[in-house]
Amino acid sequence: GGKRLSPVQHDTAQSSQPSPAQKSAALMGEMGDPVMRGLNAKLAEIERDIERQQRGILDGLSGMGTDMSTVDMEGIARANQRVERLMGMRQQVFVALSHQQQLRPSP
Image (cartoon, rainbow, N blue to C red; front, side, top):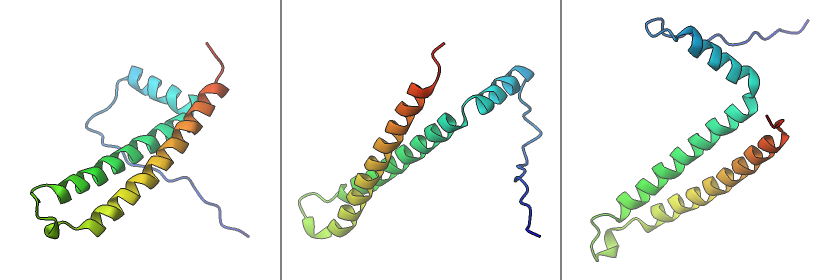
């Protein structure tokens, strides 16, 4: 027979228990729209990556003055390419979020 996969259980810190109202709200959010939550999480991750890359570009350009020989232009070009790819991914997540919002029933 085939192996059955069981869901992964995550341990949570016991010291900071959410209130029943917070648990209820979180549960409703989880059951309500996991796709939207996932898309929003991915969007936040992409935006953090963009910011990290741009900080790296700025750091690479900082303190160079007029001496361009000390600047890692190849590294900056690679970082800019990564930012461009991330911006494309960000746009696709925005499109998916828009589609999900259109599919949701209006209140």
